[in-house]
Length: 318
Image (cartoon, rainbow, N blue to C red):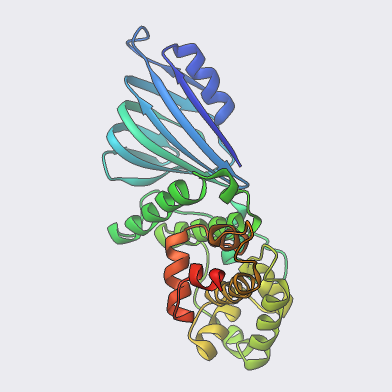
């Protein structure tokens, strides 16, 4: 759970920083004497979220990052961005896949303020694995533009939530359940936003496996391991079914998803801790919520009131 801030007007310093923060690259500018770069990075395992403000035009040529790299433009433009088979330009409001993990890319940043979010490709497999057997072909994104403006908006909202309500507080980001849930939420929204190789519809075998026994096994596994970081793929593997079968079982029998059920179980644990806590002690609602994977106090309070009919602070006060 790291944070760092870079601010320099020296082009060589900026290139050195970018090489260390991303991958080996070369940058250039027609105005090297006026080339201020400001960058803030917040990170947790498997995910980094960077806000960049370049007050000049900068060309770039970057070697493969080895990670999924998303770009969200706030102001300015990215011109002549190229990687294998693609040439495109981006402006304010655009959300794009900057490049696949294994390909180099190049282009020009034109006095822009933008967000770069990077995540490990393995996160996609955690939410879209094909079954209990090892995945022979990892899930890949196959397009650099989202399916639709609505899909792009949902992904942007997820990134903003991650930046402002998880990574902004190192203590929150350090909570294992929050880091695990946030990474899976980001990966799921990336898959929902971009064309990809994951198969989401259940097969005939998946439908056969989505019986009540699978659900009971999944519920038992969730309730036994709710205090640990859990992925959908791990729950499916424990039940010896595919992720699709697991998701279909929860939808068929409980009209919910595995992660939504996990959140409900963790909410119940938070409720128990609030009831057991000493009202005069140093435990806070935010502390207990974060311990059980809830990063946003306001959303936690709203969910808690919806289920228990009172506020978490009232429960803590006894």
